[in-house]
Image 1 (spheres, rainbow, N blue to C red):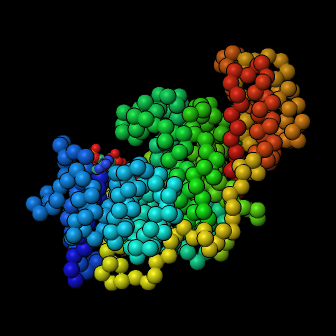
Image 2: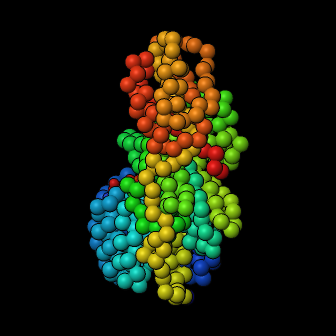
Length: 434
Ligand SMILES: NC(=O)c1ccc[n+]([C@@H]2O[C@H](COP(=O)([O-])OP(=O)(O)OC[C@H]3O[C@@H](n4cnc5c(N)ncnc54)[C@H](OP(=O)(O)O)[C@@H]3O)[C@@H](O)[C@H]2O)c1
């Protein structure tokens, strides 16, 4: 069987990881496929200082992505530049030129995946995107093939390695968020601009893609309530541990009779659950099916090689289709046909809550806060207070019985006016639905 030609646009983390694997593991890939994958063209903005594996002189090296798309021997184009501008143009151009595309671009797929898929369908080619969520975990394959026969009722994930690394470092070392972030940046776990990671936006794009695949819904990132991890203090972990919980940036998609509840937010999760043991830069996804019940997937969420494996495995699947043919392809964004579960406002969410207050100590504080909770028909579960270290900054916690997010928000906004608070209360759900 003849080779399938590959063009790679983007030679950063993922592009070089992909190229390394295609070169180093070429023999095994060929054995598994029955034919070779051959790199025909590579593209970046510059080639200086790039450590690339040795490639035949015939491989085109260019700074113009259009040359990769137009190369007659390129059958599949890999888009690993990121962002939504040039990447969208290049993917559309490749699809329209009848070339399948493999991408790692969560931001673009979350925002425009359904539309790009219709371009791919019209052109009769494939758009593979395994690497866009949880780098090394083959979760797309799981949702589209492995458990496709099930009906997903809930999906929970830890989908941002940087936030998870920072949270587990705060937990381990009892250091403040800013210090841990600076260390994560030094070690290369966090980018110079950490906004997308620590404010939950990257995780939101990933949850948007997974929830669309799992529930067959038309979703956009703005359907998902999201909150980052900047406000988490070391003391929150001490209180969480007292409650036999830990704190993670939890991505959650739950089916209810009325629709989908979708959120990305720091949450308390019981220490006894498997998700609580996901530490450092690892990712995990827990899927609950109506028939197959629980399945759990764990692995590296990012990094050149784990993500490179996802790209190369997509390349192999698409190349196999090119060589052996495939049945009519159906977009994984199946909302036109399903449309069962519309996203609901997060105010409908119901959970026990952890409320952390920072106050200047004076008498009557607990009574005042309990009075506000009672007014909003929220039952108090427990009050926790670690020994006093500084009476001007006393963090303590109230946990509540299950209440709606709406009630909690109204209570928190009323509390925020209290003169004894040194900052607005921090509210986190205590997840018990696992
Ligand atoms: N990093 C991960 O572990 C990871 C994991 C999963 C998914 N992803 C996704 O994978 C994609 C790539 O991420 P990355 O970390 O590899 O990014 P990166 O290290 O910043 O690399 C981006 C590459 O794209 C090239 N590039 C940018 N604009 C270009 C243009 N207009 N024309 C040609 N080349 C261009 C850059 O060229 P220069 O080198 O010359 O600047 C660079 O080689 C993103 O969508 C990201 O979200 C990343």
